[in-house]
Amino acid sequence: KSTAAESRLLQYLYQFLPRTSAPSLPGPPSRFLIGNMMELTHDHLPIHLTNLAQRYGNIYRLKCGHTTMVVLNSTDVIREALVKKWSDFAGRPGSYTGDIVSGGGHTISLGDYNEEWRAHRRLVHSALQRCCQQSLHDVIERQALHLRKVLMDYQGRAVDLSEDFTVAASNVITTLTFGKEYDKSSLELQQLHSCLNEIVALWGSTWISALDSFPLLRKLPNPVFSRLLKESQDKINADAITGSLLQGLDKQHSTENGVLLTDIHVHMATVDLLIGGTETTAAWLNWTVAFLLHRPEVQTKVHEELCTVLEGRYPKYSDRHRLPVLCSLIHEVLRLRPVAPLAVPHRAIRDSSIAGYFIPKNTVIIPNLFGAHHDPTIWTDPYSFKPERFLEGGGGSTRALIPFGGGARLCLGESVAKMELFLFTAYLLRDFQFVPPESEASLPDLKGVASVVLKVKSFTVIARPRAATKP
Ligand code: HEM
Image (cartoon, rainbow, N blue to C red):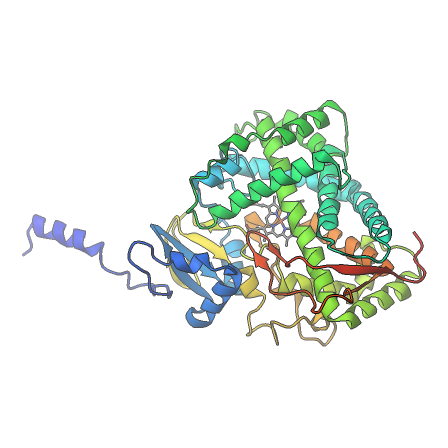
């Protein structure tokens, strides 16, 4: 007969036994103290994590200090976690730098899942939906026409277009939020971008939670945002998101399950939209031009389709169903280069499971969207640029695409982004032929540089005006 002391000892030892009901997650051997930290320092993390999936499967674990990270590498497992079990995995891992970037957890993108976050996201989401229905189309059209003028002014010179794309994308967001647009040379825009770049660089560091001691506190609260926010509050602009947000704030002040949303929430929401909506869209446009230089015949097909279907006029977003070749190009660039290749890390907010593996509370989940888009069991010849795979009979399905994540943390700007990608690309390819400069020995390098945003290495291109381009 066992005594009470013996049974307590057995209970104590039991907790150290491996759980036999669920298999343990595969993963590379973990080194003493540093775990798998070295795996996370690779220069192109999405490619490295995708290569590891070939060895360890679509779901594997990495250890980083006390933190366990689980990397998901197929659309099915990513959907299981983010969509089907969204309420288990809607958290964000906390970190010191993340807290600084997010103004103490007030951003939507880095804020943890709780009542306050839900009220905040709902407020910004409905403000954005209103803009999409009312003014977004006009705002993007205006920026697309401005971009057209900028490219015309280059008069066939070889240039790096990345800054022009950034300005166009950021002007869409600043028009929506501050009711204001900027010229490339404006000092205010330069200050805004340098501030954004610093935040993104700092944000990127939260990735490995190792650079938590950055002394960038002095940069916040950042004066540029504060001033712009004040200006936009001073003038009444019913269409601007900030206006809508503030209207919502009046109503929401102390309602919403007792949640109090204040100026800091509005301030951080504009930061969210600017960070989320500038570099992503700009990087995507750059990738499109880079890929088209490699396969010029795709450009010709899109141009022909635009001419035939639109008979000379500029496209509307509602034309997208009649422009399958253009849409196949957009899908293929989103597949090959999902510009947020590892999304943003999630955190399990309770014990759960993915693909039959036990996932304890606080595990960090990394949705490897890049890996899912290169899954050889889903995509034929996954590393090749073949927009035609999305055309009828091509075998590719948009259902397997997941560039905007999913579930509770689905990209907040998805509808804005989709309209931008469509209209900007259609306007550009209607009026210009992109050709490599004769002096360049080689075409753009398509591997890219991966941080929070996956970007193409800078390259120059000639935007040659098409014969009959009427504004
Ligand atoms: C989050 C992709 C454009 C605002 C995300 C996430 C992805 C993504 C993968 C992370 C989802 C997750 O955590 O699971 C993209 C792509 C874009 C794009 C591929 C364009 C090609 C935009 C735009 C905006 C925006 C234009 C703003 C207007 C945001 C925000 C979040 C987010 C605020 C955080 C959402 C949250 O944590 O709840 N995006 N995005 N994004 N995106 Fe986008």
